[in-house]
Image 1 (tube, rainbow, N blue to C red):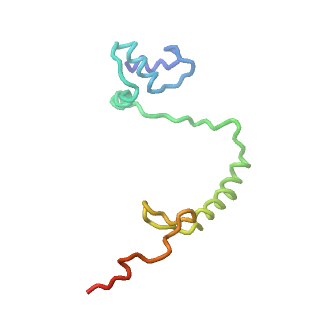
Image 2 (image 1 turned 30 degrees about the horizontal axis):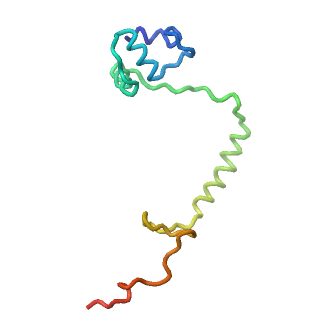
Image 3 (image 1 turned 180 degrees about the vertical axis):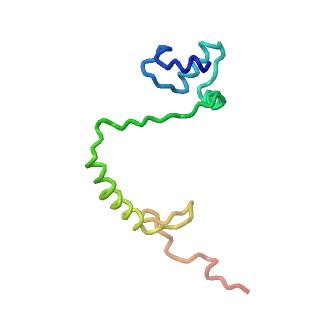
Length: 115
């Protein structure tokens, strides 16, 4: 099984040399005749000590000046805006907001004296 996967995805007829869980499931079925759901293939790969690999490549359209602007200007401005919001009610069922203000008067129990 590992030798088949080490040949790469293109060797098995896929357009790109990138392994996905459905592709691995297809190769496993071709090689062994056993069909696995793609969601379970990660367990098989983990048992074979294979790990998730992420691409180190960045987008071709990436503009370093725009990235710097975002990090140094835009993101701090957004953080400041988000943290200045006045917190509403902590109740999940009756949030205090402009569209759902609190009731005007106190409830009946509030005016009742306790003995």
